Length: 208
Image (cartoon, rainbow, N blue to C red; front, side, top):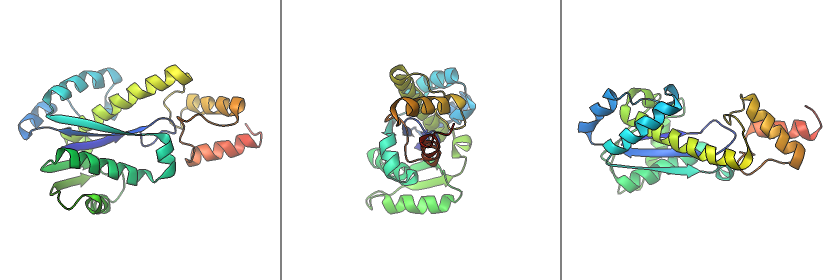
């Protein structure tokens, strides 16, 4: 089983945590088809690979964590608990996952603390696992395609806001316009993130 996420960094939209269960005999097929970290693939290529992954996978599922929940709790804990739910659902023998922190061993220890005692599973927790293990790359692709789908739905409702990352001028312009018109941000925004809090403070003082 591979687990990965999409949407840790943006200030807009949910984070998606995905788990993919694939028989070891099919792992070579993932490699042959070019399955790897979704960040290195175009949206069109991700969609094409998504269909192939779904055909090769025994099971897969994702969990969406909305902005209001990310505002209330630490994002690492939310991701870890989502991983626990996916592992408990599928009960795989072995799980590969991408550690989002500089210390994978510490991340693995916390994950084991959260896992129910009845679950016995071998964990492979590494930085850049989405680049090194195709099964994690598969989870990365499914998570990214699902997040992109949800972002497209949000843009149809709220208008274009770019990538959702604070480095994107379109995203900042969208946030600024929302604050100018309504004095606040819509529920798709992670309000407690430092970037958003700094913008609210600055714009609240009338600064550009």
